[in-house]
Image (cartoon, rainbow, N blue to C red):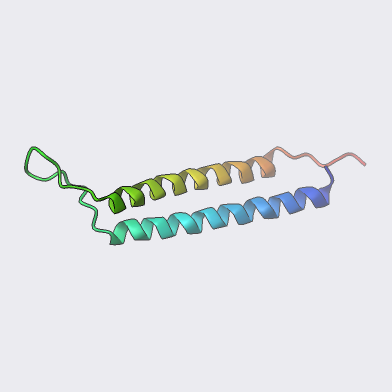
Length: 86
């Protein structure tokens, strides 16, 4: 792979990471604004979660996984590439 192709892959990986971080930030903000009862409450049964609450939690989980994967890919491209000998 030539330097130009590698540079393009690095730009794409960086952009993917930035996009993933932005989506995570949006998911985190929606979670923060949702008032999901995280405290189990005083009784034997926890405070209830709605289907919307569960969807927000799953979105948050999925978005942080995408951040981790995008960062690992970008790090790999930055560290593991060696320029071709010319």
